[in-house]
Image (cartoon, rainbow, N blue to C red; front, side):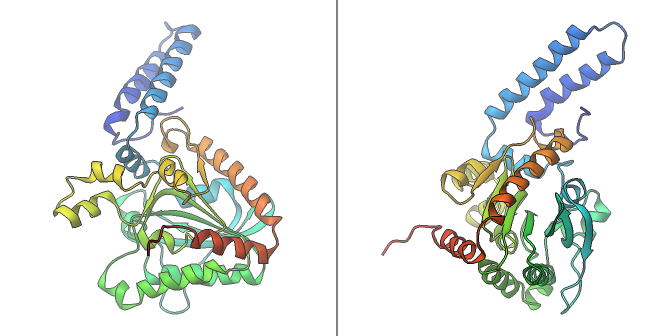
Length: 317
């Protein structure tokens, strides 16, 4: 398994150094199979130990880690016959949120998700995965198309939030997200949502209302990032590590609170250490979940979806 490209996170460094040592030894003729096996076992043990001690902030760092698969990586490795659809028919297209028709295990589906860039040029073009209102209107247009042709909708969430710029607000950012929430709540087809990285604020919820909400093990999901929360409360980001624990934004926290329905385990070290295995894991989970949803009558599906959404939160008189 190749070593993920840097920059490496601080807590990853011991594993990276051991992996480099193993690679160097494999290039020599002096090492035997037993030595290799022992070193690989040591590496696995080290990764398990690190994984058991990860803090909430560590998981936020992993969700943003360079080399982690993005939406189009999952689309190209899990789905077939993907045809991207463009434009909201009101203003324009938004490269930060991709939508398209595809086949999943032979079944036609509508798939969509936030797309970040893998280099500076692409990151700027994709607006760092922060969608504009036209992105959410495009998503809704495609969801209504899916409803018309009775296709399941699969959404992949990975965003720091909807773009907060003046232009986006002038074009109705809040209204676009609110309309998506309303329409997704009653959409007459199965909706499967997966947080694959960051799931921040309305930017995530704009494509995050569904029958099942799943999260990768090292993703986070919340109303605001820990840094932004710290900046609002204290004027800087110094409290981000403490707040990441308090805010309950990890998959384990949200599963315990019954906000999400399932945690998807990642390869040891995170999805970026073995993307191919991550694709296989997610494909298996999607197949299982979609098979279950396809068996439920549409009316019952929508009723359960509404009950699920309205049950979130606590109210005091």
